[in-house]
Image (cartoon, rainbow, N blue to C red; front, top):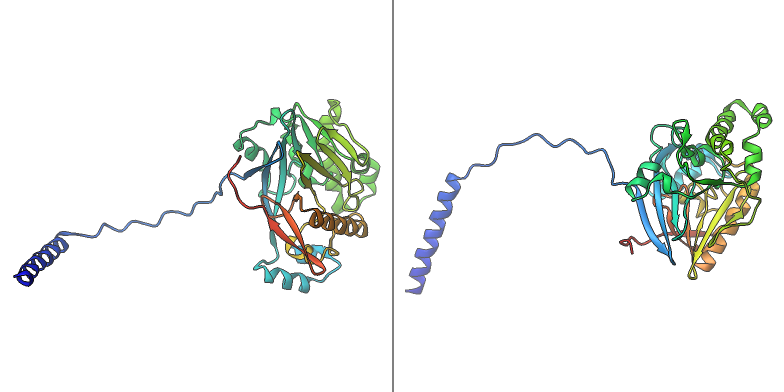
Amino acid sequence: MKLARLFRTGAFVLVAACAGTALWHPPAAHAAAPLAKEQAPGFYRLMVGDFQVTALSDGTVALPVDQLLTRTTPAQVKKILARSHLESPLETSVNGYLINTGSKLVLVDTGAAALFGPTLGKLVANLKAAGYQPEQVDEVYITHLHPDHVGGLLAGDKPAFPNATVRADRHDADYWLSQSNMDQAPADAKDFFKGAMASLNPYIAAGKFKPFDGDTELVPGIRAQAARGHTAGHSIFIAESKGQKIVFWGDLMHVAAVQFENPSVTIQFDTDSKAAAKERRKAFADAAHHGYLVAGAHLAFPGIGRLRAQGAGYVWLPVNYAPPQ
């Protein structure tokens, strides 16, 4: 009896299913949705002691790094990139960093604005997306006066950060703001001078550019440290709070896949490649030994992490993603 009942029930279910199938029609096909072209807003924040640090993306620029890196060969660069499934031209991040100390809002580097092509110039938009306004920035610290670090000082022909004091090492200012140096520079380098002058002159005219000389305490908990070589006054900035530390490297390095493995590799943009390589090796060794956070202007966004020594080189350990605290 049970088998007969199960059979009758199963037969009913089968008939009902077939009937339903006969009545069901697949939905009409629709055209594929167009590809979306935007990423999420380019900001990422974390706490360093009581300081909140927000990484801000200015965008990326494709660089022919196999042609730009020196103390190596194009073939070797391509080989090393391939091991990381990368190739040249390499999409290279341009990052700035906002530090909220609780009493001061400090921006480290400003991106390129319009000085380095159409794929950059997003830093201010990402600053706003992160919940801040340019008028709130109290201090702007420039690691060096190359266009992808100073261009964002301007919004059109006006200061992008109208209430901020701008700080940079006087060795860089003396070099890049000199008409005489620009006149003597090769034709392909003159735009670097023009970009620095155009970006800083409005702040100079307003009395809001205050150069420093080498190692200098800037605001409580943040200091500049000379790291010259990439440019005459290249600086790094160190922020410390409650025993925690983060170091903003600027252009101490450019291509993670190559230069962490071999810190001796340099780049054509270096004013003094020997000195730049020395500063890079010193910075890498110190970061790996002490385990503090570092932030790089050209490390893949958000460009924050730590180093571990491995053989003759280093391994980059990106910060572990976490929600804001």
